Image 1 (cartoon, rainbow, N blue to C red):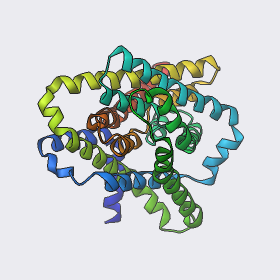
Image 2 (image 1 turned 120 degrees about the vertical axis):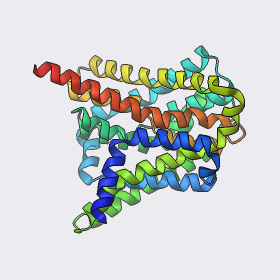
Image 3 (image 1 turned 180 degrees about the vertical axis):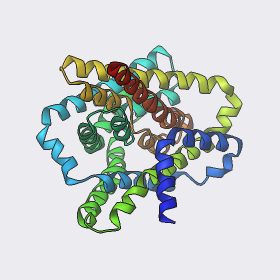
Length: 322
């Protein structure tokens, strides 16, 4: 039974984007399937995702923050400068309506995504640096995300910065801390590695539930406004994500990082914690239900594009070997 669950977890981690897309499509045709994923339930699910992240972190991962402060500082600056600025530019270039603009800006102001660590591993990036960047941006998120939203979206809607700070603290920092404590306390246990091996699959299932909940929420708007709304929103998400990859790589090149670190910085900057953005949009912008649409599309697309980019990097390596 355990072996079956481990195989399932591995399959879900390797095919996360396909699974999430399948859930999204199924929910579009049967919107009541994930109608229960709203409000507190959605927040709890995100908390579980962050808990799974904490369970896989060790004290060695946090040592990176102390041993490589300049690298982490450069990464954090790139993360919280490039993505909000690109989002702000795209909102005006595409002349997005307020609800969609809020969603894109929120994705841009969130920390790096958890799955970026997997992508860095797949493309022979600097995994320790990737984990360190994810930890740093997550720890900074309670302060940086509300602050950046106030700067970029304050003219669109009133931002409850204090409420957002507390919400991010509850759904990210506390679950990650609990996971880290459990890892530290029980890592020597014989059963703990088995539990850790199930975390990637659980994380993918939880993320799929969040996406399904969003599709259920915006279903009527998607139906009434047609395919154009989806394509227009996807175009913005695509440009935002691709710009993050390109500018992240350019930043690494500018500071003369080696190839592994440039790849990691590219992936870390481009892939955002869209699950967190989804929960924040549902909680703080409930009067603008379409704000969650860019967040949901980002959840799926960032996994797909990250896999594609990792594949491109690997193909480049194979050409070099020849």
